[in-house]
Length: 139
Image (cartoon, rainbow, N blue to C red):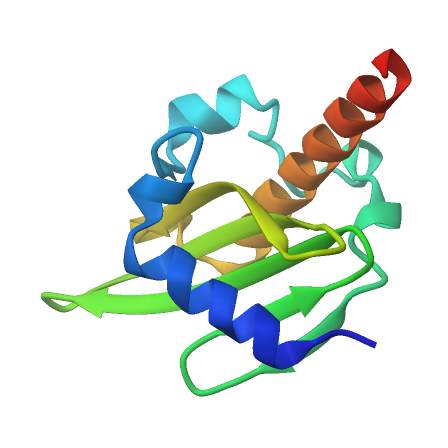
């Protein structure tokens, strides 16, 4: 199965200094981003690819939800600061030695709802999957 202790160790390592581990900054989900990702109508079932998101093991703890499968590790972390709730989502490729952090995004305000968080996640997982397939073919 999955080494949960190791995953927790890497979660702590990554979350302590996200900017050090991310290839790009944490990005915020907003209207321009949703337009760029073609997710304005995120309820549209025709634009969904359920294959990447339906086979995750879910581990819920007090501070986060962890989604794990053979390809990805996703940490979804709710946060409240100054009476404003937001959610951090960190996505890593689940590699043999340890998870490799790919990206992180934050949702807040009207964009901080579970359906949108998961729809953005689905789109990003698809993009990472396709990019990795392309890189593998080049090698």
